[in-house]
Image (cartoon, rainbow, N blue to C red; front, side):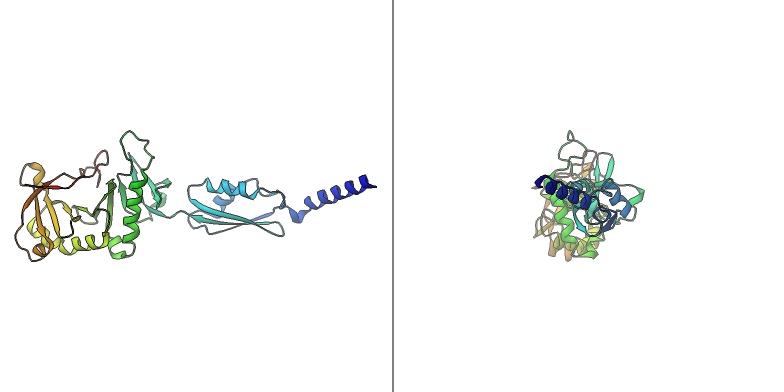
Length: 286
């Protein structure tokens, strides 16, 4: 009798597990914006048809996380026969230039996908200098440099009028964010904090600076009481960087004392030069 009872219990359990209502017949997807439902379901190929009771949902979740677009995911059972999938996608912060290729990257410096015509709708700044050394793997992003870029862009996001003017960012020096604005050619050195105040200051002073220096190589705003302006001609052996207090510049007064500084990266590839190097170090008095 005990054997018959055990056999009956086992048979009933097997019958229940094989019942149509306890098999996965439907997968719903929410939270997807860039990825289509078909792309999400394709990552779960083989889940449909499994038992609702015994399916390893954590294993399938890890498979979803293998997609570069998926930052997080949750999977739950919904009777009868339905698996509900909720995904959180990565949010690209910029277009990283890594060697000769372009990639979408998120706020953590994670590569989302290679940038191409299919992402032309993204109006994002170009980011250079993310690879710490020329010998590193082309997709090995330095965390401190990515963090500086993310902090800069997150701060400027509070001022859409400023963020919308950003064209390129160079973080070759993890303590000095260098930017280029749209319809401008000057490198603007912002340091590692007070991004909004410094960039707003440059925009307000730019017309006066252009009156005094027709072709600007870079403007250094890291020193809050003074600004440094280096003309393009200074690279050809002429006088070095001009320095003046912000109030003096606003009043279009004299140039102040001269200075000479290390030169930012070449323009041949945007903000960064051939190896993505930006200017480092301070400015020396003449």
